[in-house]
Image 1: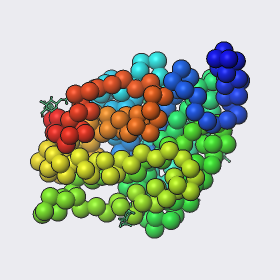
Image 2 (image 1 turned 180 degrees about the vertical axis):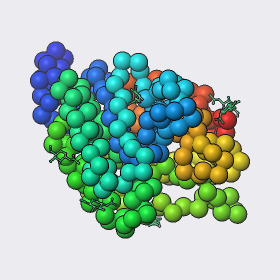
Image 3 (image 1 turned 45 degrees about the vertical axis):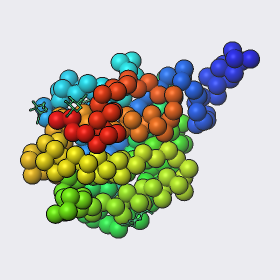
Image 4 (image 1 turned 60 degrees about the horizontal axis):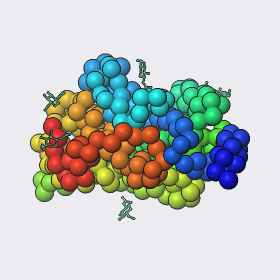
Length: 256
Ligand SMILES: *[C@@H]1O[C@H](CO)[C@@H](O)[C@H](O)[C@H]1NC(C)=O
Ligand SMILES: *[C@@H]1O[C@H](CO)[C@@H](O)[C@H](O)[C@H]1NC(C)=O
Ligand SMILES: *[C@@H]1O[C@H](CO)[C@@H](O)[C@H](O)[C@H]1NC(C)=O
Ligand SMILES: *[C@@H]1O[C@H](CO)[C@@H](O)[C@H](O)[C@H]1NC(C)=O
Ligand SMILES: *[C@@H]1O[C@H](CO)[C@@H](O)[C@H](O)[C@H]1NC(C)=O
Ligand SMILES: *[C@@H]1O[C@H](CO)[C@@H](O)[C@H](O)[C@H]1NC(C)=O
């Protein structure tokens, strides 16, 4: 029975997107803007390097060594420019490649930081819907991610949160599409408010750049995403536990 079930699952894999269980090989493809992107120089890049790992930015991977983790996010991208500039086609090719190798391919999508500068939330929402549909059509599994918070604070210690309407739009699309959702926006606000402005600013790429991350910021928020993935896909993903860092994050303790 067990054998029959696994062989059915393997042969059905290219055509369906249901959960396969822990033994099924998983790949990750990341889509988004600079707050996700693969750093190409030391002390650059978004949370993607903390999830996938990188020798360039000196971040240890949160996924197991044999797990493909392809970061196609791009600096400055909106949902619209990502498609128009050809990065979306690169993402689709990466997803197809992993699906063809018989791997369950999870695709994280996080936008908002640049979309908010050019159009109302519904514009990003329509583009996210199209992305989710296209990813499913080629056998990938979309995972919508709300925008990482900026580290800009009000005098009372709360985050000055301009991204909320874009985070809410992302949540709405995940509900409409029945996709997985990682509420990184809420989790990152909760964390930076707990550690406070000084510790939060130590995660910035430059002291007054409240958007981008240094390598410690990448480590912290990459682990936060890994923990949100684990919570959203219990016992299904090849994520290496990091109990001390996860403890600091879940208890609002500054690691750096
Ligand atoms: C990041 O880019 C480097 C090349 O600059 C590449 O070797 C590495 O595989 C990329 N990492 C990810 C996670 O895509
Ligand atoms: C969404 O995509 C359309 C093109 O399909 C583009 O005109 C629009 O600017 C995009 N919206 C955002 C917020 O990037
Ligand atoms: C992406 O690929 C599609 C299909 O091959 C093509 O029509 C489109 O022009 C490509 N987009 C860009 C920006 O190159
Ligand atoms: C976002 O959604 C939350 C929860 O539904 C709501 O409390 C909040 O007012 C919304 N924020 C914005 C800016 O729409
Ligand atoms: C957790 O936080 C403590 C206190 O700041 C720090 O000493 C420790 O290195 C942190 N652990 C990790 C794994 O980040
Ligand atoms: C990261 O944290 C370590 C340990 O606190 C510190 O020595 C290092 O300077 C930090 N890196 C950056 C880029 O701030």
